[in-house]
Amino acid sequence: MSRVIAVVNQKGGVAKTTTVANLGVALAQAGQRCLLVDSDPQGSLAISLGQDPDSLASHTLYEAMVLADEGAHKDLKDVILHDQQGVDLIPANLELAAAEIDLNSQYAREYALSRLLAPVRDAYDFILVDCPPQLGILTINALVAADSVLVPLATNYLALRGLQLLLRTVRLVQSRLNASLRIEGLLPTLYDRRTSHHQETLQEVRRIFGEQHIRVFETVIPRSVRFEESPITGTPAVVYAPNTPGAQAYRELVQEVLINA
Ligand SMILES: Nc1ncnc2c1ncn2[C@@H]1O[C@H](COP(=O)(O)OP(=O)(O)OP(=O)(O)O)[C@@H](O)[C@H]1O
Ligand SMILES: [Mg+2]
Image (cartoon, rainbow, N blue to C red; front, top):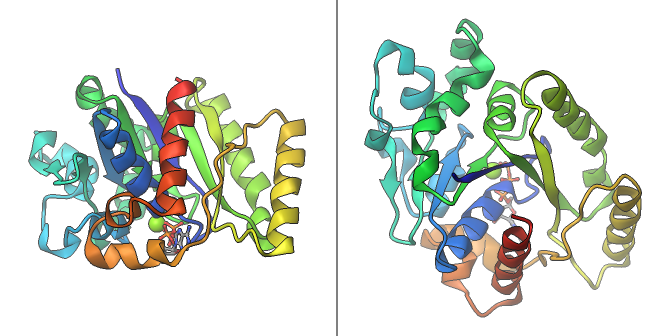
């Protein structure tokens, strides 16, 4: 049975997609069977892995999850891409933006992703879900389908704001929809060790969440231009620049995630 990890933060640009792509491919490099699910209409995950989400008409998460009741795709295998980098991918594109409206009228709308993934959970060791920068119905679906939530967190003061709202949402999902959901950990990202403000924020994060018994990963993802370049190459940094500190950090994260099993 796979572990489903939702990668969530309603704040934009904190490296959710970068984390799903790099952690996913690094897990695959470590021999784990991985399915990556793009639950963001921006379609960035597919692009990061070298796929053009706009050319995938009617073969995306939207058809499989949102239009499933209309028989659009009975077989999930129709929409799973086998990526060259050793991971499987359910892509998304702008069509998924309609999910907010379409799902609202559906029965048990919070369980659409959970239902969709149930038949393939035995085929993978890990399923990672990339969420959009909102706490809307797509993110709630990811939290309901997940065993745990991983929160990428940029190490500056403004990025910390809003985290309590996210944790409240997680607790709400735990109490009403998915009692077994746990927090995998907070992952400091975009860290610039030469900036004292970043060092102080990281210390604060470890202190505040340590007191709340919420895990903060030992691994810290450094800020590096390689991460910005790599989507152009259609490969994540662990493939594009494997010997850089950033790629090494994601491989260390793999070890922490595996130990946490
Ligand atoms: N460690 C890093 N160092 C430098 N740039 C990074 C790093 N991680 C991610 N980036 C860059 O920051 C930008 C935002 O990253 P990413 O798209 O992964 O964030 P996101 O949280 O998924 O954003 P959104 O909320 O829009 O989905 C991208 O241009 C990405 O290449
Ligand atoms: Mg993203």
